[in-house]
Every structure is written in C-alpha cells, then in structure tokens.
Length: 79
Image 1 (cartoon, rainbow, N blue to C red):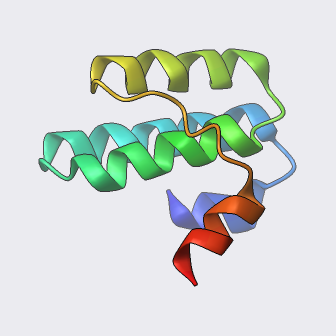
Image 2: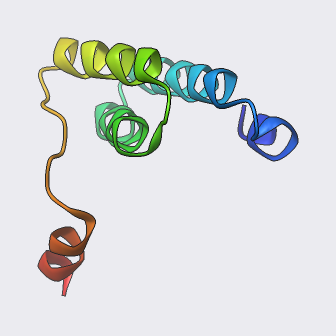
C-alpha cells in the first residue's frame, strides 16, 4: 500500500482508501497507536470528504477523537 502512494498519488480517493486499509491492518495487529495516527493523518490531509468521514468513523470506533491541534502546536509540545 505504501508503494501505491508513489505510483498513484494523483488519485486521492484511492490513496485515501489504501491508508484506511493500512489503519485497519494496524487495528488487526493491536497497534492502536499506529492506527489512530494514520486515521488522524487522513483526517488532516485528505481532500476527499468521503475518505475523511470514513476515517472519523473508524477513529470513533477506536474510542478516539480527531486530533484538532494545529500542526504548529504539536511541534511546540515536542520541544
């Protein structure tokens, strides 16, 4: 799926779907931190509303809320 990003990055819908599948795989492997991070990234960066909606639904099932902190504030907390 990561290779998909290189070959088909202009197809935003399918790129988003591939990362939703990656998040599902993380959940299946009990890697909830990775799944949550992947879903938050989709929510923050996908230009496709359906993909964002699906990511939010999956995140809600994990018990998380979308990361609403601006990227700059996240960087500030890490310093």
